[in-house]
Length: 415
Image 1 (cartoon, rainbow, N blue to C red):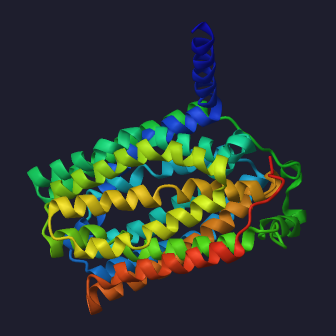
Image 2 (image 1 turned 30 degrees about the horizontal axis):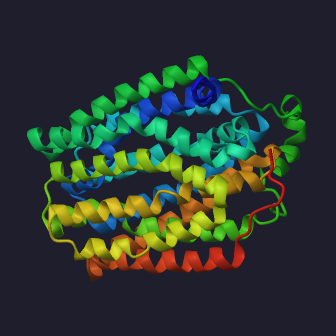
């Protein structure tokens, strides 16, 4: 009995040690920021329509923002590998405070669209953030570690959609959303301050001190994505692009379909999203453990293949209970893909180029998502609200076929 207790204590201490240092800072900062963002993110599509926009202009706006992210992510990857991770993460954290406040005062969808596009500049820190996480977790526990981080940082987000739905239900769509924006700005400031005070640098490039106007060509050369790509990254990137295209085609339109076609209230949809987030927290760490134990590629195939038909099932739902069941199925099947994919990417990427590779990944994701959003908006408005969900299923199945035939795991993982 004493031995069992000792082992349990060692495992518990190991879990606590994992969340010390930068991983703990990122977990807390992301939890605070995610909670605030979750209050408004579920209802952005409805607010955009409420300001006079349409599904097509919504898709166009989101697509432009995604394309803008391409250049910004490339710059962010260069900064992460050349100047270090911390500065850019702190700067963009404070940059993100202003946009919820601006969203709260706009009266026209065109201004909202412009602000959304400018706000996309905040993704500049994404490569640095992913690089810090990869730098801080051992290869043997990378998927489990990433999943654990995502779970802990998502805990407060569970109740955020309910808060946003309650505000909209009681104050109306426009006024309720604006109140939610004020709450989001407050949490963004708290998160930015926490990151500023406690985040530590994990990588300083040896050329950083030498960069000046006389060696501008060095900067340009370093900023370019690495060529050739590390072995195995290209097919992994293509399969990921297909998955992101599929998600882009439906992500903005779930709530519009649930609200306008099925007839759910905003509070009912908020409850569904909150239950989805709760299920994410329950399943993500076991999913990460399964990926580390049985193989990331196998888990990616299983996740994408079982998730594919769920979007079609969503279009067949006609009540709150039916939508809830399908929405939870989407989580049960799809939750394991992202941690396994991110860990496999880290396994294939040397530490010295992680920022730029992550930026390249973000560019691929942004372009694919932009195309998906634009296609989804066009199909939703001009053909049928159900067609984007059929497109999701088709793209996911193509991704599964590609992973099976092209993606392989490395024998030796990068540290």
